[in-house]
Image 1 (cartoon, helix red, strand yellow):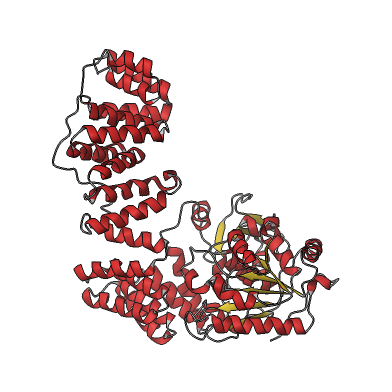
Image 2: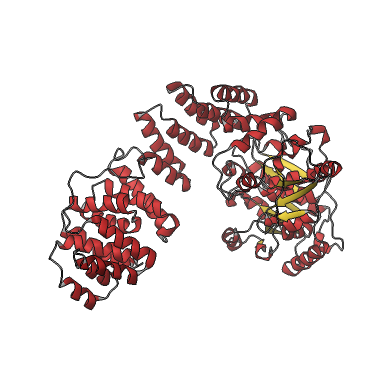
Length: 627
């Protein structure tokens, strides 16, 4: 993309010292430290290179006496170039304020065109993005109308990533907005980069504005059309999102990704037949397209066509965007994927693949495949994330964690979400019985802990209102805190957040007077502790998330708040076969959570009226609550 390199200005910089030598010393300074860089500069000076570089290194470190001595042996040169080098070297030493100071002096002491050439070299020739950022901030003070400065600053801050320091993300967003306001055409990549930054802020109105302006210039820009449609979808207008992508398809037909997006938005409107038709069209254009194949599998599974659905779902394994440390990537390097080969004397590893909830959902079928493997004379090892290991080892003893192993040298591997295909799972074969069990000693400890925490509460209820933000549909399935108010206002009910990392949200709710507690700091063994906590609660109120699957697999009363379309496993209505203790509460239309909250609140009131309270029970288990 064009945001990774800069077009050099026409005016060339005139320096006494070759830039290659500066780059060499900067590299030594970063990799080996000041002492090594000073020694190298002395060697270069002895070979005829100016002593000024030796002086600059000392000065950048605050060694002014040594710097003066070296400078006295050098030929005079423009002060702007010298201060630019001082800023570069000081930045390499981690002396940010010194780098800022010398950047400002350098910009003031030399022509703006010279500063621009130096900045281009810093970014393209040196990769010194932190030093470039200092210089660009100083340049912007002198040339506030030059759109290149904030655009290049955004590039440098983006390249720094997490090394940019506190506030770097906010500064980058502001720089992008400033560059766009000054000149939207300063670089073709700018509008998209601004849109992506605005997406992080969930500023959908601003995303829509930038996208519409870009599409007015180029209606066939499929990427900007996708970004606009995403913003419309997040605002619960899937019909508008569909129309946007249909316009993109009309402007430039034959793009499988555009057709797949139309299929997605049709599905989000529950227009499943139309969605399937256009997804088939996308696959006709590109038979190897992953997204439409997965989405078509979702439709098949949603409607009970599991034979074709499980086969199509294998397309997920063709994704090429996995990180090298992803478990699917790791297992692919370790051993071949099992394709039904004989397993006598062999070891098959069934491993985690997607989310924790998916692992909990499908682990129920591991013993069935394991029995088949044993009959052939082989061994099945279950390999899961460490957070699930303690819990699932109680379910299937031959279980290891991905992080700790030992995996040894298995002969074949199988992603856990491929179990239904291998077993030819059909809807009528699904059973909703509980299959996981919490540690009874931990359940007792949690029950005592909850009673001490709030002895006056009549109900103790787990609560999950938000999922992982990396999930494609997280904005659809998660619920804003304010929307929970009727539920949280229930008298004599204590709610417990079951999601680590939500302490700030819980603090806000507590300050507002709601009875919400965060005890996730006591989850020392991952989901094994979550399971014990659930065992001590009267019920779980949750969005579609891993705790939903955990509660159902444990046989605990679970009240699931679903968005209008939701995951395929929950069908299209409010009945499901997977967990007998699970009750579904679905949005009547996209974005309408209030009716769901109202019904779940009434369900808890009914549970309270029935006199349920696990903290007053001496038993480690709790009977499932029927609908």
